[in-house]
Length: 332
Image 1 (cartoon, rainbow, N blue to C red):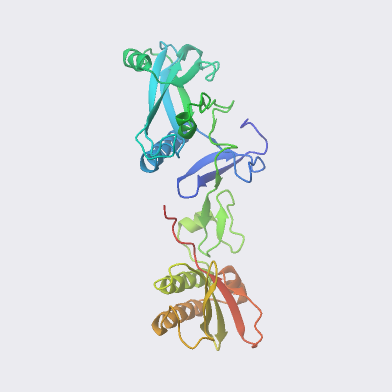
Image 2 (cartoon, rainbow, N blue to C red; image 1 turned 60 degrees about the vertical axis):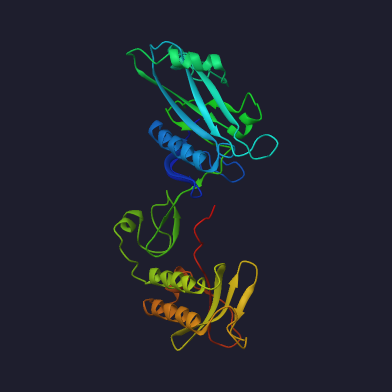
């Protein structure tokens, strides 16, 4: 239940698919490392809208959807049809246009006592559709809400338990996707470049906090410029090697110089080679210059560490660092 002394206020998301959403959760309540958040009704509506957009774009056979049905405490019983849209594949894994729908029967006078017991969910029939057209929500009583979670992948397989009601907690919050979806903490990024979980208000690497980040205040040590230099260098190198992820460099007399470039699988260039391989002189030189300009803004070794320049051992006696380029946006 959400009435837990270990609950915190934070934000969660699922990659760039869902969220970020405000929620409450117990950070220790994990499923394979993932979180189990509780949302207000207004947030559940936002979540519902996002799941429907995801299902329309990627197919109902691979996206669960959340549905919020509104009624009145003194309304007559109603039937609501939830369409599953067109599925990309049928049960034989062949492309098709199979459609699935469910019928949600709600006894509104019992919702206040037990929303789960007051609701029946089945595969929709022709009679259900007729009943849905005939019976509309009536009454002037207190507003009531039923939240339904539809797992279309299993509904396509004729499962009778793939759709259920999300019961509100004693605090009126809805636990959606807990112990089932891959919820993770949403992040905020400090001006110094450090990524923090949303509920961590103060940056662990500098004096700024989440509110000062909103004001766009730069970090005094210059580490934000160092991170920006890494990003620019990565953009330059990725013009010719799109999957470049990291590089090694040395600093001599204040001038950084790349000595290697790597992808996730291999080193694709080192300065020991006779030519530039996939790169050219202009790209390597441009990346060096982006790093040099960033280095001019730093105040010392602490800024380098905070800025993501990891010192590495170098037998030549010069300063050497490893840098990691920011991840590319997710592609579907």
